[in-house]
Length: 326
Image (cartoon, rainbow, N blue to C red; front, side, top):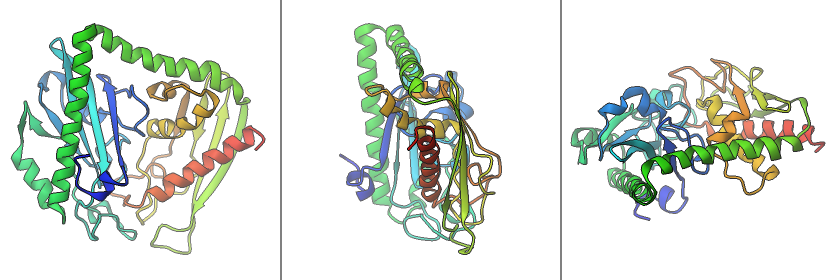
């Protein structure tokens, strides 16, 4: 409610999540949101209460985000003197630089045309804002007032999550609350395995869909194909047959873990009432061939990756429809 851009305030293009200290998503899947990029660059013992990290670097995001307008903030949450969880907010901000207003070029050929790339860094350190980092970020947008308002809203939201979590720790004890998070993940995995998987027959099915073009070569459709394999224990998705990464900005820099949590939401129809969180990754796996449209190598352009994301959803739905006879 305190954000400034219409994308956040009105379109609600943002996500909130709570991660365990292991970076597993506990709450309802925030797409692929995890704190893994922070754990990669910073040690737990070097984090302090009041720290808040920020990043938008697609190729350091562990699949959390796939284009640069999605700034992500992560805040460690402490209980009884140690980190128990991470609060995370990310959302589509209005502009992060690049060759076009809005930072969504449909004909870019490199991520360097798409805006500023911010690796995981501290925006707040022990409750004090890192003004130098903040100024660099705001200098690289056409709408610094809107961006600063959105970032401050993200900071406030992280602090609310942390405060509520700390209240639970004070009420029940930090060990109980932390254990409860892992129990919620167990419950998701157990429910999907015992309720959802039996409703899908065992077998192997393949489906494909196409993006009309990458925005550069308008005569060359881009194929997204998935083979869905199902047995009593799991679902495997194999995207090996998908097209090579392309020059244009429809490359989808996700990970198998992201795709499982993105598409795993469709399993909710078979186990109504279950909260889909990191538990879905225990019964569903996804393989992406490096260098393909589904796993591009830096510095491939990615700004228009939504086109590919929606087509991989269609391919998955097509394979699932075959498994269920329509």
